[in-house]
Length: 312
Length: 274
Image 1 (cartoon, helix red, strand yellow):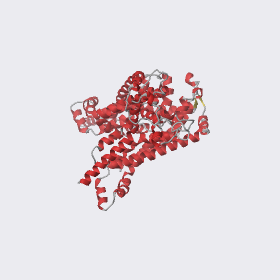
Image 2 (cartoon, chains in turn brown, yellow):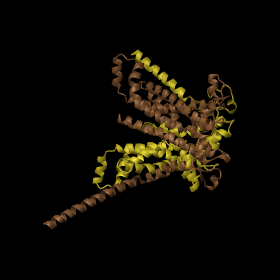
Image 3 (tube, one colour):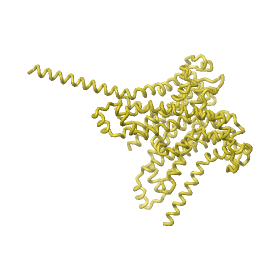
Image 4 (cartoon, one colour):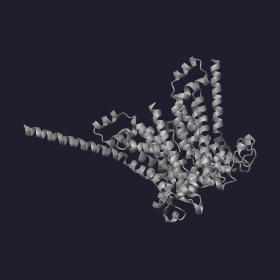
C-alpha cells in the first residue's frame, strides 16, 4: 500500500520535473527566436553607444586612422570641447534650430490638421500629397531648397524681391536652414495631430455647438485640451528627431559659412571626418556623446508621455 | 443646401492652395530640371518650363544611372537583412512571450532616439577594425539600424492582434512553433511585412550619412552620395542636379502610386523617420 503510494508520489515528482523541463525548453525555444535580435542589439546599438563613449575618452587622431591605436586621455576631450570658442555658437544654433523648427512645424501641422477634419471632396488626396516631402530622401529636399535659396538666381529672393544670401551670408544661413527644416517637418506633425483630432468624439463638438460655442471656441475648449497628450508626444518626438538632424544642414550649408549654421550633430561629424590632418574621431565622439545624453533625456520623456497617452 | 455646397467648394479651393504652397519646392525641382542651361542664370527665373529640355536628364542619367543601381542593390539587401532579423524576433516577442521581450522592445524605443552621428562614429571605428569600410554588406547593416527598430515595433504590434486560439488550434494539430510561424503568422502578417519592407527600402534609399562616412573615394556610390557630389561638380548645370534629384525621388513616387495603402499604414503606425 505504502509502496504503491510512494511510487505514485515519485511519479508525481518526476512528472512535475518533466513539466518544468518542458516549460524551460519552451522558453528556450522562444528565446531562440529573439536571440538573433539580441545579438543585433548588442552589436549595433549597445556597442556603438559604448564605443562612442570610449572614443571620447581616447585620443583617436589622424594617425590613429592608419594605426588604429589611440591613447586613453581621460576627460581631456570634454575639457577641450567645453572651452572651445565655437561651443557657444554651436549650442545656440542647435537650440534655435530645434526650437524654431518645432514651433513652426507644430503650428503649421496643427492648422492643417484642423483644416482637414472638415469633410470635403479630395481631402484624402490632398492630405496624402502633403506627405510626399516626408517620404522623399532628405537630400532631395535639401538640394532643392539650396537652389531655391541661392542669392542671385534663387526663386525665393525673386518672389519676395529681396537680396538675401540665405545660405552664403553668416547672418542668414541658420535661418535658411531652419526654413527648409520647418517645411520638412510639417507632414510629420500633420499626421500625428490629425490622428489625435480624429480620436476626439464628435459628440463633444456637437454638445459645444449646442451651447453656442463658435469654431474658435470649440477648438480651444474641446480640441486643444483633449489633444494635450498627443501634443506632448508630437513635440517630444519632433524634438528628438530635430536635435539630431544632419542631412538637411550638411547638404545646404555644411554648417557654414564659418560655424554660422553649425549644430551639435554637424559639428560632431565635422570634427570626426572633415578636419583633414586635424580630424579626430575622439573630438567628434565627445560632441556625439553630449548630443546622445541630451537626446536620451528627451527620448525618455517621450516614452513616458507616450505611455501616459496609451493609458489615458 | 447652396450654402453647404459653397462651403464645400471653398474648402476644396483652400485645400488646393495649401497643397500647391506646400508642394511648391517639388514643383520647382521639376521645373528647374527641365530648364535649358542658359536660362538657369536668368533673373527672375522662368516660372514654367515653357521650352522644356531634357539635356539635364541626359547628363544626369549619363553620370548617375549606375548610382541608382547601387542604391537599389543596397536597398534590397537592407530589406532582406531587416526582415531576417525582425520577423522571428517579432514572432517571439508577440506570440511566444520570449524571455527578454520587454527589454528588447524598450531598447528599440531608445534606439530610435540615438543620433545617427553616434552610430557612424562608432561604426567607422568598428568597420575599420574589421575591414568593413567600403563594403556593400557594411552599408546594408548600417542602414538596417534605422529600419530594424521600425520593423520590429510595427510587426510585433501587428502579430499581437493575431488570435492565440488560431495558434493553439495549430498546436493541437501537431504544428510546432516554427511551423505555426511559417504557416500561420507569416501569411496573416503579409500587409505588415510589406509595409516594413517598403519602409526599410525607403530608409536605405534615402541614407546619406552612412554612405558618406563608411565609404571613401568612388568605391561605392549610392544615389544620395552621387547627388551630393554632383552639386559640387555641376555648378553651372543645375538642371542636371535637379534631374538627379527627380530620379532619386522615383522610388517614393512609385510607392505612393502603387502601394499607397501600405505607405499610409506605415506612416500612421510608426510616424518614425530619421
